[in-house]
Image 1 (tube, rainbow, N blue to C red):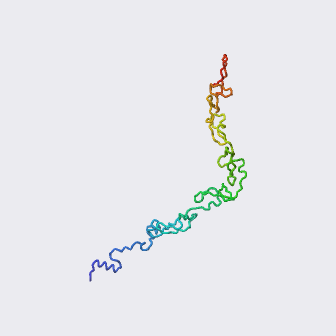
Image 2 (tube, one colour):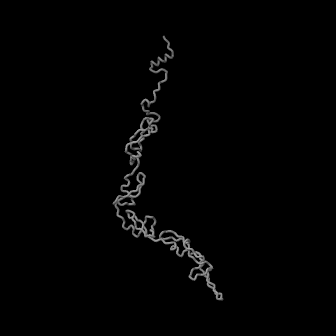
Image 3 (cartoon, helix red, strand yellow):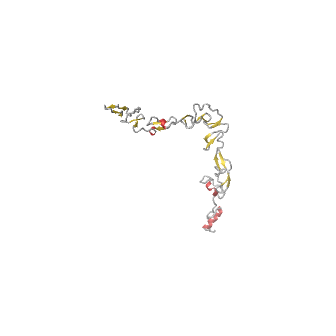
Length: 271
């Protein structure tokens, strides 16, 4: 009976059992190289990776999101994203982007308003239609014929639009309270001299313009006078009493005194 060497025995057993010899297996490559998708790996299946789209040899599934028209992707491939955009978006064929636009926003609207894209639009009513400024929509409207009753300047809402109540003549102003678009009445402003007539101090407000005037800057008292407590100029103490009736600031005027020699002491203001 022949005796086999250990190495020969192992080779013989390998042949009988259908297994290879103790040589290393040949590298069969990865599953993806074999044409089998890797669906059970750690990544949880085939994941789209736009960053490696060119390397992976597959199109980026997110490239057309927000895009439209024909354009070239980063890999140099010509891609047709179509002209349809989702929702209220419209294709900007110059930028190849889906953008929000509201071309019909002004239909039936007037004045300034913010459309659903967040853009301010100014709408104007077509001829024959009147803007209702309180609602911001156009429509037929019967204006209030008495909107400017008692007013002769400024503007007044007549229920359909802002109606002019007239303009003031040159030199006059329109007294409007409280807003600039509220109707009012014309009035003539007064000069500082008119407002501060007889006053040497104090603040006087023009009833036409509501502007204040400091009378101390308008009227100056004479050197023999001072501005008294009632905001009028009056004679200082020791000043001769005025025969015209100008008051002493103290309210007291000493009587004249005859010294007996024909000389008469004049009346003077005393404390």
